[in-house]
Image (cartoon, rainbow, N blue to C red; front, side):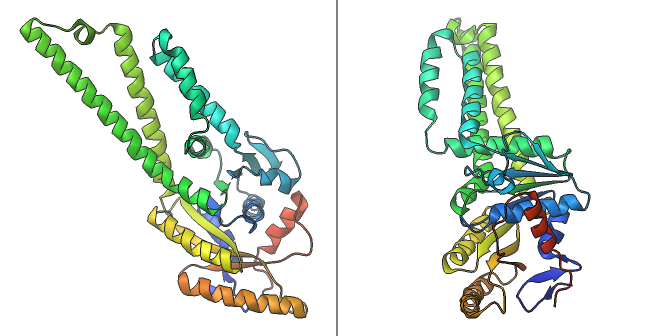
Length: 348
């Protein structure tokens, strides 16, 4: 049964609610306002899971590359071993977009006649900075990471970008699935119309050679288009089903006990709820410790006022408080120390 301690944190059994949640989910997202410590909290959670024997993949979708800064080492777009049981990677938006566009360009070159290659390349170049391109490319990469790592890892932990970007990203699987489904239906409708015209040409002896006698290369091209669309539909639908499955996935909102992060948390929770994303824990990071002098006492009293707003707006969500540390958390030892702090041992 959950217990609330004097500092406002909630614990279940011998572990903080956050670790208890992490151990029960295959996919765990950490999000919240910029600067509240999402990277540190997600990394400490990942290490805590690895320390009890799980194999964990920690993934950053934040373009700031904070994982590398946190562990004080270079982390790229392929899994890198951080410590026993823990691999990490950072999804670089620019690299992701470049790879994404290269794949699209290659597919279009196979589908289009050579005389249109120049126009295709021009369109691809213009698309690089088109609105939504980064999000769409990043979503495909996330889908690939989940697909590739689902059987290899016990847990996949995502450290996401600030709230607004993450909220848009989490609704994209549904939108992209619907959009791709629409393209497939239009493609099928066009095929049925072409078939009707061919049959009409046969009946009236006025066969249109352009449509009625499509050569094998054109039929092969249309088949390839359908294959690409079906593959994308499967990818987005599979990701959508996994992140909306409450048995598999959950979202943790990290915040500071300050006015703007609290208000942004309430908004983010509602956005995620509408997207059918399960939010199961709030982590209030960098709390002022009790009995630490007049300045921090006043700071803590102000935090408590903001947390009243949070608790009144989201009363059903368990909350865990993590207290401010004297030094920056940098390097593996510091993150492991924080992971140990997240256990509910000797709590009064």
